[in-house]
Length: 461
Image (tube, rainbow, N blue to C red; front, side):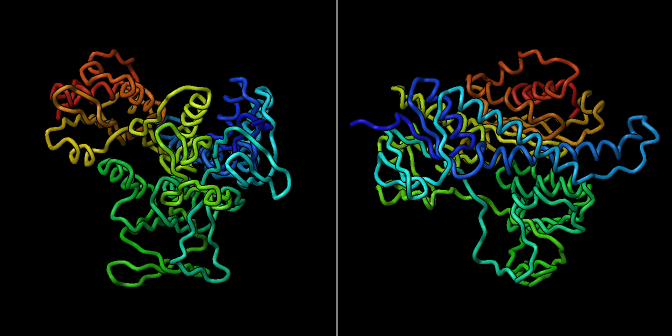
């Protein structure tokens, strides 16, 4: 059959625009359908604008610590929210413009509107225009979860991360519902901005996806910086000036002028008409195999829409694999070596198994190497020695099972660990790697010394 396009991508976020660019460059006649802004959540209301705020928070923190770096006369620092919003807009605008240029350079036809499947090879855009395509790549992203179990009183100031990113006045108090990545990053930012922040989390520790030892260290640092935590708390109601929650069988109220809803995200696939054409859904996501192929052989799924690992860099890699397979390849996606990062001060970065997961899979014989950053020269120079480098190693062959970093610059370091795992390098090979000095990264070598040889060089314990 003859189709209007070879490849049509639905969604213009990281997975979508990357897939469209790659398909266009591969010589495929390509279309991208996007209902909102190019760049999706990540560029417009997620990763990038959040990190703009994190950078301002970091500078505020450093400014207040200027006397410890022998700098005098600094005075009081505060955040100019109007100026911050302008900078955020400039950064995101430049990146979105770059995406537009990439799509144009690859010859991609961009259509604005909402796509809904009419059949496996046809979508209707906003109920009018139809687009036919041999292949489709679904990349519709995700949206904030708003739990129905919570009662929302009229006039309550409940926001998602999208609304919080746009505020022009720092609230006096902020209740953060959820101690996951989004909640903790915003807790860090607004506590540095001078807001009284309280995090309410149902679990008994924050950041459940992070190694428990690292998560506990991060919570203690945030507490030291003024953030309060209410763990084991189930929120039941959001009032105009308070949050009602249950804890240990008792009902409590937390006064709060503003509330951030950050209890997670879910795939945005509800309006695609997926079920009408026979696409299989699993736990609210569109199911696909390791080749990113859905239950229909001409439809691929990348990014948050497949619900597998909801990170922008995962979507980028899935886009590469989906397009390669459309072009005749047989590539598969692996999810056990994807790094994750949390942007606060200090930073958290990890890849692979946590210690608890490794013990469950490999037993108690695993080797765990730790190196505290108070023993690292560069961390001391940076003025922040809170942190830990932790590696988990299989005992016989030295396979690297997990790497967990908490400290300054660690989000820039985790790619080294991820690439070592991808190359199937052993702990012994990392021990023999020469790390530059003075850097925080040399602590990674020290941790592998501790795991493989029984002790680090520069740590007495």
